[in-house]
Image 1 (tube, rainbow, N blue to C red):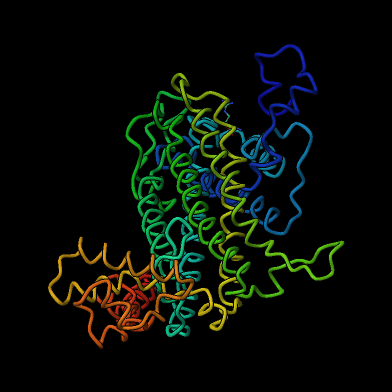
Image 2 (cartoon, rainbow, N blue to C red; image 1 turned 135 degrees about the horizontal axis):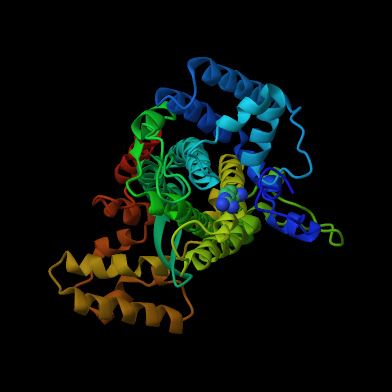
Length: 457
Ligand code: ARG
C-alpha cells in the first residue's frame, strides 16, 4: 500500500493484483506538470488563509519545484506504492522536505485535485491541437490555390455528376475542418473552469480563495458546485465527441483520396504509401486507410466514456479514473492524424490528365437542360428533353457531345447552333458563380477565408 492504502483505517495490506488494478500512475503520470502546478497554487492559497506560514508555504513550493525539475529532467523515480500522480508527487515532496510535506493536502482531496489536473491538461492539449488544425488548413488552402485550374469529376452516389474544381473538392473538406476548429474553440472556456477547492465532495473547510486559485492556474473561472465539480467529466466527454467527429471528417477525406488514387487521378507520395510483401507492383495508400480506420476506434472511445458516466451516482467514484486512457489516446491520435493528413495533402500530386479522363460529357447533361432554360423553357421540360438526348447517345453508343445539331433538333426544335458550346467543362464550372460554387472567383473566396481563419487559431 502507498500513501493512502496504508492509511490508519487499514489493518491489512492490499492484494498485489488489486494494487495493479487500482493504480493509475502508469498513465496519469502524463499530468505531472499540471499536478505540480496545482499543488504550488494550493500551497499559496492555504498560506493565504493561515494554514501554512509564509515560510512553510515557501519550503513546500521550493520542494514542489524540485519535484518538477526531476520530472522535467526525466530523473523522477516512480516507486512501488505510488498509486497515482498525486500520491507520487506528494510522496516525493515529503521525502525532500520532511513531514511538512504532509501539510500540503489540508482541505484538498484527490477528487478535486484530479479534476483540476485533467482540466489543465485538456485545455493545454486543445490549444495545441488548434495550432495543428491551423497548419492543416493553411497548407490545404495553399495547395488549393496552386491547383485552382485543375478540374475533376464531382460525384453523387459515387456516380459521375457534374464537373468541379479539384480545389473546390479540397476546400469542401476544409469547410468541415474549419467547423471542427470552431467547435474546439468553443469547448475551451467550458473546460477551463477551476474545480480546486471543491474538496472530496462538500467543499473546502478552510475557506481557501477559489478565485485566487483559478487565477493562479490560468482558469477562466471557478466551478459552481462542489459535488458536481468532482464528478463532472463533461469536458472529457465533449473532447472525445469532438475528436470522433474530426476523425470522421478525416476519414471521409481519406476515402475520397483512396478512390482518386485508385483512379490514378491523384498520386500519393511514396512517403505515405507502402509496398506489398508479395506483389512487387503494389503501392498501397496505407496512410489514408489508417486515417479512415482511426475514426472507428475514436467513436468507440467517446461512446465508451459516455457509457462509463451513465448512471454514476454523485459524487466521485473510481469509475472516473477510466477517463484518462481514452483522453490521452484521443489527443495522441488527433495529433498523429492531423500531421499525416497535412503531409499527405502537401505531397500529393493531382494528375490533370487522368482527372480530365474521369470527366465524361454526360456530366454536362444538366448544362444542356440549363441551355434551354435560358431560352425560356421550364426546367421540368428541359430536364426531360436533356434526358432524351442522354438516351439517344446511349442507344447510338456515342458520347452525348457528338450528337449533331440535327439530332438534337429532332428531339427539340429550340436547340440552336450555339448549343454546341455547352460541351465545355470549364464553362460549366464557371457558371456556378453563386457563393460557395465552383467558379474560380468563388473558390478563391473560400481559400482566402480559410487562410484568414487559420491565422486566428
Ligand atoms: N487516480 C484517481 C483518478 O484518476 C485520482 C482520484 C482518486 N480519488 C479517490 N478518492 N480514490 O480518478
